[in-house]
Image (cartoon, rainbow, N blue to C red; front, top):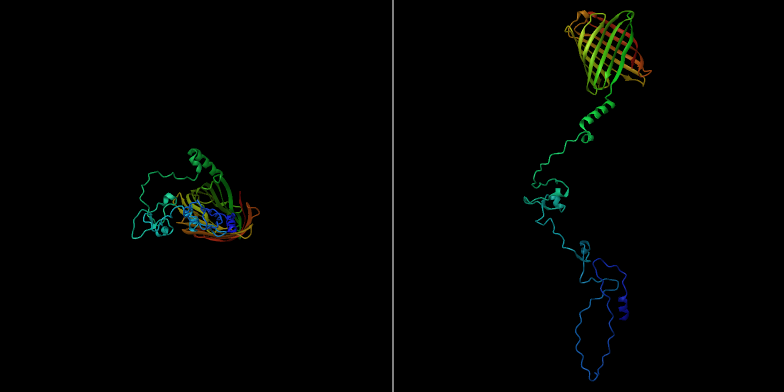
Length: 380
């Protein structure tokens, strides 16, 4: 018994679980006194001993005994039987009739109870939780606010802090420095000599412009004549060009005929631009000071064979609404011209070319034919 008691008295090297109290070691019993059959004289019989309270059962060596009084702990440890829960578990929202009503999806998440039998209880207000309104949920009645909406945002954040006049001036300056500057160019698409059987001649077709991307002043000129002779037909146009989209310009102005022959002054309305597949297209209507209406359309495309060799097909058609005997023009299609030119760009600004040109005239100036064209295309 003494050895067993000493074994129990040794400290146990185990950690205490949270909320558990270690029982006090059991004291060893004193050895029983031997009974004597002879009672000493003069001694009274001792009084009967009071029953002692039952001692707690000593645990087996290496084990802890659960105390009768345990402390509170978290629900996780209470589920393991180590201690009692700090508070009774919350009631299930799915069965709690005081919980707010919501859709079956949110009820499955435990936020509220499901709507059954057409209940119309107030739903859980998710907006107070920062969620916003949940799909499928009817929002509780709330007063409509009267706060004015925020100002409409602008494309420039600096407009909120600087004077509008200063911002407008800065914006105009920025546009001018980033694409709004004024430019100019002079280009001669055709400047050639036409060689044909005994009727060699020359021809030019060019224009110059000054302005920006939207507004421009355009000067056009074209004409032809015979080598060693006077200028035959020639014209000069002064036009205002206005961009109507990134690829097309609308033009309006005046045209003046010069050179030999009858001279006319025309009002001009036309359009020019870049058509699909990189075709340069020009078209114009001319109304003379005598009421004669004529028109012209031309198109060409640059086909790059190499970085410097370029093949250019070209077509030009002239039309008239009526006969013009003074200029030997017939109503309808008065002339058509087809050309094919191959140029070599020694520099981008200077490209000699060789080609062939075919022309046909109708009406009083009937005639035409093919010619060899030698010339240059230049711009600066």
